[in-house]
Image (cartoon, rainbow, N blue to C red; front, side):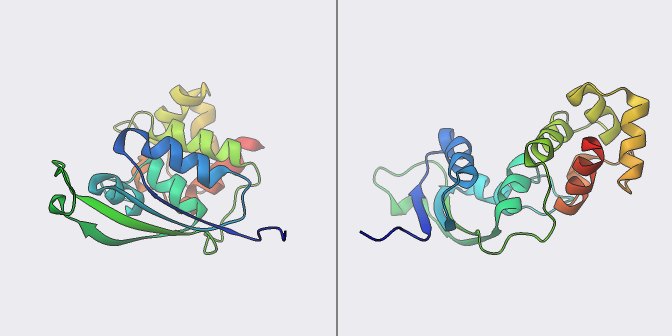
Length: 171
C-alpha cells in the first residue's frame, strides 16, 4: 500500500462543534491540501471576514492563517429535512495557498491573537496587558516595535500585523 501524500477534508459541521473540529483538523500534522466544509452561514461569514468588519475575529485569523478561504455558496434551509431555522454555507479552505507571513512560534502567535480578541472593545494595548499579563507600558512598547498603534483594536489588524506582533512578544 502506498502512503497518502495529501488529504482533503470534507464535512458538514454542526454549529456547536464547528470551531473545535475545524481547528483540530487544520492544526493537525496531516498533509492537508484543502478542506470543504458546510457550516452555519454566520460561521462562514466569520471564516471569510476581512480586517475591520464586525465578523472578523479569532476564527477568521485562525482559518485564514492556514489557507485561502472562500465561501462557495449558501444552502437554504429548504435543502434539509427537517428544515433548520438557519442558512448554511459551503466554504473552501485551500491550505496550499497560505499567507506569506508565517510566525516562527505559532503557539505564541495564537496566544497573541486570542488575547487581542479576548475583549473586543478594548484597545490592543489593554487587551494584551490583560490577556497575556504583560504590564501596560511593556505592552505598548511591544506594539509600537511591531509598527502598530497601541490604541488600535484587534479587529483592525491583518494576519501580517499579528505575525509581527507575535514576533515582538517572542523577543
